[in-house]
Image (cartoon, rainbow, N blue to C red; front, side, top):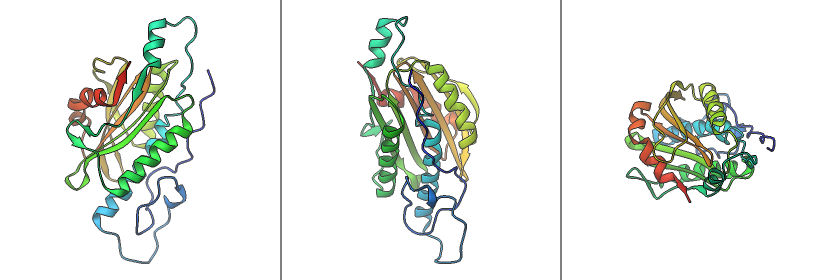
Length: 237
């Protein structure tokens, strides 16, 4: 198994972003900048997207994919498991549980940056997915981040991601939930970052690792749709 790659050196969320415009997701120097006297505060919509960017940077530290150890199985592993895992892919569907992909240019740029960083950071990945869904103006917004590839120890990858979430997004009360017909393990919990409440669910199986973050909602609300959403993101065979 190859050594896990180094996660992107994204800053930890919590600082104020510079005024005006969307900060590029791959410019950590823009995060944590000290407040300064200057132009008036940006509109509420723009400020809310800045918060979303900071939360995405935190997710990159955890998921990228926590430095997911994607590698070949040992010979002792079941051949069918290896084949199923190798044939697993992830993608960002046009809609997720009835929500269309977000069309806001700032959110699309952040999602593109998320995918780019995952492709850089995850070794031997076979596919990646990153996107936003819903309408932030209605406080109905989801983010997905996932990668596929043969996982040596999916339970460890899940546990490592949970540990990272506790630090980066203050996620607590992580508990096991039904992973659905695709199998593997899944956990959900409540988080908060930049003053935004978050419902967070993750899954890991021998072919993929993924995360769904629902902004402005609790894990209890996300759990009810988790299996449906995962089934629309992950495909086997």
